[in-house]
Image 1 (cartoon, rainbow, N blue to C red):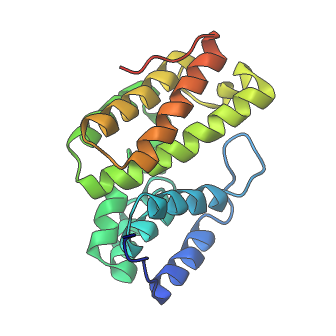
Image 2: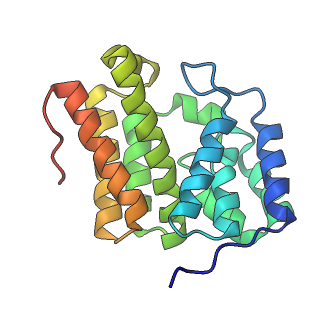
Length: 204
């Protein structure tokens, strides 16, 4: 028997509007695609992996603290959508200050986040992996369209970017995260490795 479908309240609609408002000026890095497209994609993946309304809202808002307001934004999210949502959003954030984030070394920040993710709450892991799946798929599409130079928009090296997604996958597999997330992430990591090196990626 299939599980009962998630029933949405008006909180989800409010969260969509909130995400659109706070990320309105933003586009996906190196593109003209509105950033909200990524947020909607992550929320969709969360739901496909069995997440409830709170986790879908966290998917919509997973970058709000990191890129749209820092800790004051986290407090506002808690006031509007509850502590559970705010805690998951904070757990998905690898920085809480956008300006400080720009000054941090890419790999140092990512390594710290990987350490955090390995022990994070399972609901944080679910939303975070949904984010990684959507990003990794986008990287594959960009590599297929434009070649390796498309990664120049990131501050990390090509090797660091590939290692980061491979290690996110490793954590997801080790912690038995939902297969609707680990399978597409594994496929995307292999595709990124293939497109960058000409060889099939190897899972650790």
